[in-house]
Image 1 (tube, rainbow, N blue to C red):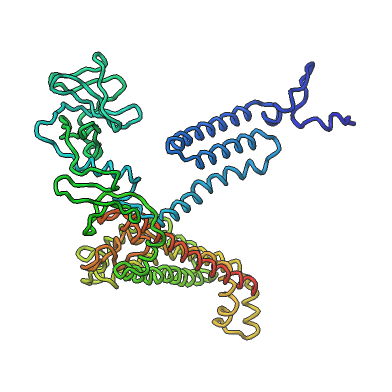
Image 2 (cartoon, rainbow, N blue to C red):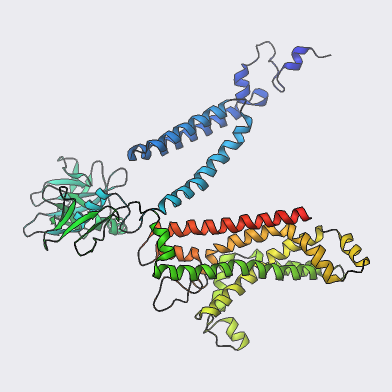
Length: 538
């Protein structure tokens, strides 16, 4: 019989013959059998976590985001405590999932929500100081007799741009966003034209590399005592003076050419002249509920918003209903044991579900083409499917019906097969007609299984961006409003507002996103409560 000592000895960790047992702490870290592989992997993963924490902490420190830095530190300490402790086994499985949930779900939602209450967008991206610097930099013009430099485009070790300059006397300088610094002779090499070809601490870009950053180079400037240095192409630069200068005493910008004074309006984040005209460059400020009220009350925006919202509801409701009806009808048809070749038919029916969705959307778009599309050629029609308001909507619904019914067919087939056949047979014995038995027995039981799926299908199609963007692009568009099309959903409308040619308005787009979330959340909650009632009836 084993002794009590042998019973309490850790499983798989016997003491080595002729020597003392390994330390208990090391055994627990190393894993069963005392093998150090688990310990090594654990330490490597913790080292990766520490490296990620350092990588995340550096920009937080530079930005002065001490709350974010504190969160990173606390999370890192918690990870080390949890994974070095032999006791916190449940936490080891939960902490990673929780961190991913916070990082990829909660944080984006919070950022979107906070953005919805700002004017963040093109012309209002940074701080007020950054806006002032951009305005003055953009107004710089070359003055007569100003210095002209031979220019080489370079980068600092962190990738930031730098102008490597040589003046007419052969003196060399490195121009950064912080200012102009002379280069020590012997630390750089210059060609026959005076352009610097090498410089210690900097990387000189070739023509192709510099051209790839052309837009960034055109906006870049090096501040000087008399103005700033800007590029003139990729080979020369000039020192100019700012045509618009900021004055702190009046918190305004004065145009030296016209004498117009633009006073800062901190409510809208722009410099505005007495006539109400604002400079193009502004700064990010909080605007309260203005984005939400614009979406609901502004005549121009509200008209499009409510029209799109109505079609959005119709699309999100019709797609699940139509696909469910067709999928259920086919499932009942092929659920009959008397039908031969059911497996072959079922395999053919799920082909649309097995094909890449984005590719099929593009194929269907070409099939509905008015000139060479298969639909018109096959049926001898001349319908401009994607050019008319209602024909485009019908085309989108047909495409979604073809792509969605196989999923509903599979779901309904499985649900029908899970319903006990003796219930329907008993109803038939009691004299119930097939239609009545289906309506009172089969269909309610079917909804218990498929109800949550129908709700999620509604939520998915409410934001089905690909279905619209890859087929109609949101069009057709009315002549007086190129931003809101007949087939636009709120999500595609939001995308056009955020990234369209009229200029990005991320604050307004975020507000629409919040409204979409609230609408889908309310309808989903109501729907899930209804399915719970069905389960109670069942």
